[in-house]
Image (cartoon, rainbow, N blue to C red; front, side, top):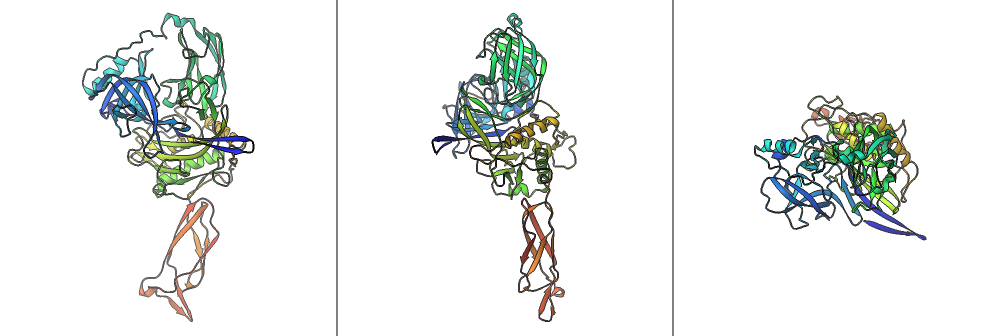
Length: 594
């Protein structure tokens, strides 16, 4: 959506974008993916089309697949459609991470089940099982294949044979029409990387990497490019920077900005060897590049990505006074003490590390992930999250200006967790073998809300995956540096007519679950005005109570003169977290008792 506001003698253009922050993944075995797929096909993407769902509140993309071979199930058509989440229609954009991101000419193996969205090309419609783990991408030059957790060095001997063993059938060989392996070809020796500088860098901060060597030719182009290990799959695949992120290119030196958003709109640069590819072949750097942290960028426009697309950073602004962003728990989530307490510990970790002004408001009945003005925290409903996905953070963005001079801000945040995971450990005790640590996942998803991307470091909670029994609840120095850098930008000034966020500090960042405590005079006379003094801790924002009066005959009100005295036997109080309530509240007991 794009709104145009005319102010005096200039135009301010407002656009919105939706980005689903990547969650932690857990591996789904090849046998589980094969057995749970209705069909498995080998094919290539030839066309794409984005479309709205029936409610016009969610964007999908239909990927037209030319089927080369069927490995499982009946497929009568030469073409099928594989639906992925996200896309861009006009100036409405939605990006879902983690989710399967496909591009025209991608080739590989698709493990699929039926899907209910409408056809866009007139062919049968499917969706991958286990989302991005349901696509095994081929590297035709290397004759290898990869998914987020596995590398198959040889398509036939390692991938197809393994699938055949699961199904107990013989799988016909894959025919690779790309015979030349550029990495091993004699021509590849013409090019060489002799150094990279600096060896440690950050992604999405417009930091420049210098690659020195020989034989780089003229570039960049469709055949001459730099590649970084993809942090979204732990480095299983490579991503390329956008053409605008190349600073210079000569036969002996390349300078490029390290991206947190790849040229195809998905994936960010992570730690690992850097690769340069030209018409003569490909070569890897002799030393590994260390990417300490990644700040999320928006590449605009991204559908389609063109040479005029520009990478922008994002910032938080004041969405709810004073100077903060307010999150609200769905009532069902709020009623669960253990996950609520675990989330609040993760919430406080970020508040007290970077002093980001996130507040927690009253619970909400909103139980959907949508741009509705409510930043909700909730569990998913049924199989809403794909297999292997533990949670997602959704960031919506608003923008103003025109390319190449735009500003982007966080307009809303939502988080959803997997409700069907039986082995969640909510703490505060650490997770042990066989348990998945909820607080670690919450810190990770809030990291995406803080506008940090994935890194390749299994000890860092911003790594794309987590293992059973692994606890990653605390920020390391790299996370702290990344979060502080984002906060520095947040505090530099408001954008797009939005006020600047104000930072918390060490005295007000601590957030605890409120404990109810009210003092009152007792006994009292019937009809007498009673003052309840609020002694609750944990900064409650609202309270409610029910009073229990005498029921037994022996508890009848005592009469002293004209005063019928009663004793309030119990006071059940409930308080909410947020802005403190008044110090005292007055109520009048009923004039008659039954």
